[in-house]
Image (cartoon, rainbow, N blue to C red; front, side):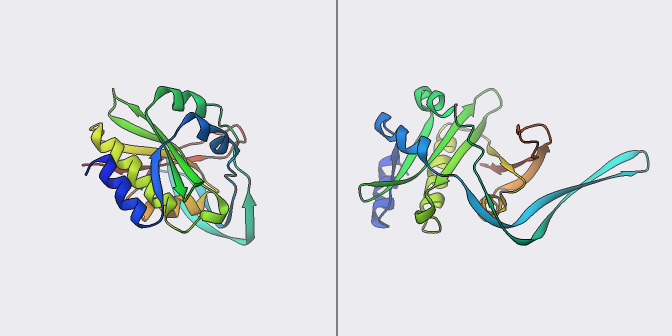
Length: 190
């Protein structure tokens, strides 16, 4: 399905997904990426038979926790200027979210850097539509998978992605400056 056909389909649901314009960047940079969670991913390690055994499991918190965004969005302008996949969701004339992805053509991987929806527009389909458009872009580029990194605290995003075909595929315990562990999720496109 062409990008124009997808855009027409999204308009039927009251949401328009379109490529971002320079005038949209101020909104994207100011968008609050904080979230609330009642669960976190917890990593457990153990030495077993001369090796190391790792396990990730979700743990319920004693009370809901508000998590601020990581705020390291200095690459957004670079990604926009590169002209790869940078799309916004608009409801009427109001922007409600954006997705930013780039391609590693050597590895044939797409990297989903940001998928952020405003707090008042969450759980209304904007995130799913932004992700759908990002995956369609990756398929058009003939990429084999789309990968993203999340904080272990971002249980809502990991749930969202898993419901849409992403699976856990690794971690990096030195990824974030705040010492949080990054967990990777990938969606195979073949």
